[in-house]
Image (tube, rainbow, N blue to C red; front, side, top):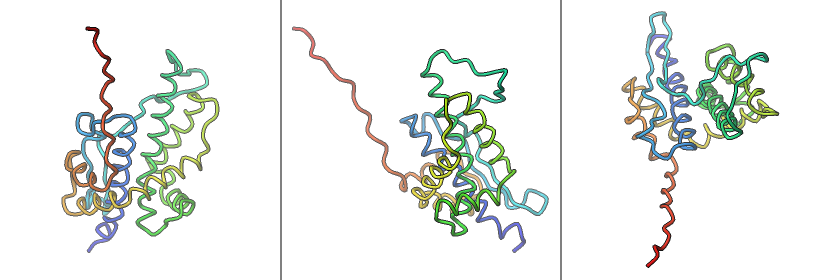
Length: 209
């Protein structure tokens, strides 16, 4: 087994962490997993050509605003738009961090503080952390007071730990097939997730005779 292959289970859990987080967070906004998929595919690569392995979750994303500065603040039509953008930004940060945090859990760091510290030490400067830090910086334009970074880390750790069986199941399949479309990934993790609440039928008013 080459060095890259030894790290493949870690990569599989990393990408599974991103994917499961995307599904769980997506469900907080939408009530149909398949009509509005949380991502298009999740893949791992045993060797990306330089002796290392990698992976990617394609098509995942909650938050699209970029490049806010003190001279170019976003313009919102109303407070509801601002709240939606803020919530999407926080979800995006959690989704970014969920991969490194799943790595930490796979390595045995199960205390949220230890998990966060190990994830940061191993991934600081990576695209996951770079994106998360950029969006965290932009939160100051979306809300009067940002949640503390540690609070977001705690939320991420809790999501990973609460859905660990789903992450493990998806990682195991990735190690065999290496690439899964969203419907395949959802079929694998759905038995490990809480059932989605039934849609509430619209209230019916009696018609006048």
